[in-house]
Length: 108
Image 1: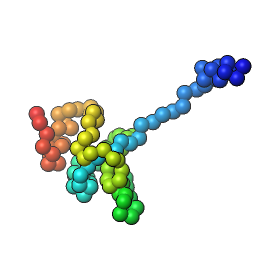
Image 2 (image 1 turned 180 degrees about the vertical axis):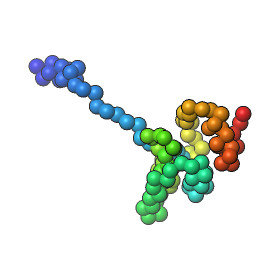
Image 3 (image 1 turned 90 degrees about the vertical axis):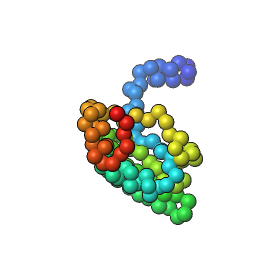
Image 4 (image 1 turned 135 degrees about the vertical axis):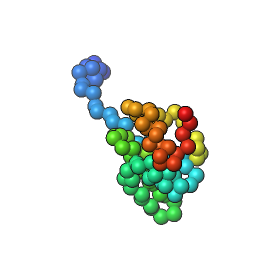
């Protein structure tokens, strides 16, 4: 009976809200990365230092509910290894123009 009730409870349960909020970006130079995202106009949400072993920096792109984290001790991944991340924009030309105006080397 317990198994039947558990399955029925799962079938009738409301789904739990799941919100993707952050992804960790492995970087080699925290200060350089911080300048880069700041120059993009992304909001600096925090820069937290805990001793010599941890520093977490969080930025959020304009209009995004999700953020990025990077720093020291944030992820064991190798710097530069992040892949498959997409920044979605409503106007690709305007987004490219803005990035170029902020000094970012963007291909055509």
